[in-house]
Length: 87
Image (cartoon, rainbow, N blue to C red; front, side, top):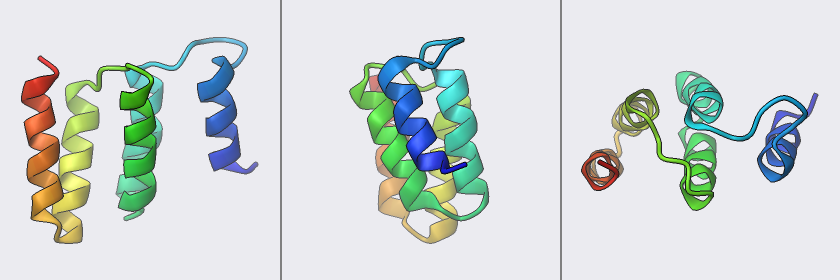
């Protein structure tokens, strides 16, 4: 299965069982961060935000951790600031 294509299809039509939400998007974002694919995770994170889905604490922590481990403290800080803007 081509996961990026499947994700785009899921985001565009909600699949058969659920609409996009922070939990399902977060699982994919966390997975990409766990395998050091932070740039891919960041694309999905941006799509999530663009669709108006408010990231939960797990998603935000995953993004901060991914950026930090990548050595990109500026992006980690910017994501942390998003935590405060979504509350």
